[in-house]
Length: 63
Picture 1 (cartoon, rainbow, N blue to C red):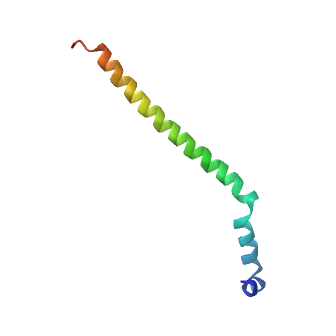
Picture 2 (picture 1 turned 120 degrees about the vertical axis):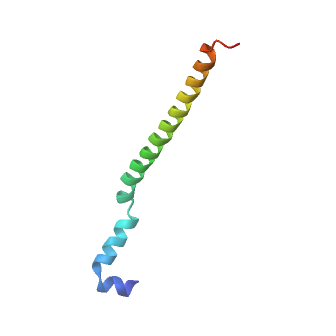
Picture 3 (picture 1 turned 90 degrees about the vertical axis):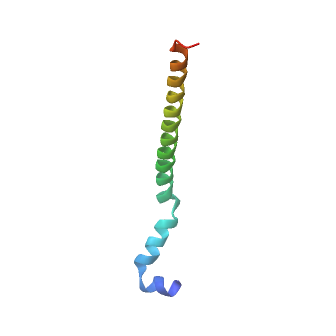
């Protein structure tokens, strides 16, 4: 790889960008936040469905 990177300095620069923590850290924070918001939304929807089912059971006249 050293011979190729001497011929093509952009290849060396792009490789350094891919492994740079400074480049990946904001992306990881963004994706972790997006995934956590998605999971919280799904959990909220499931809890809302259960609350609605419980409300239906409590307000039904059967029983």
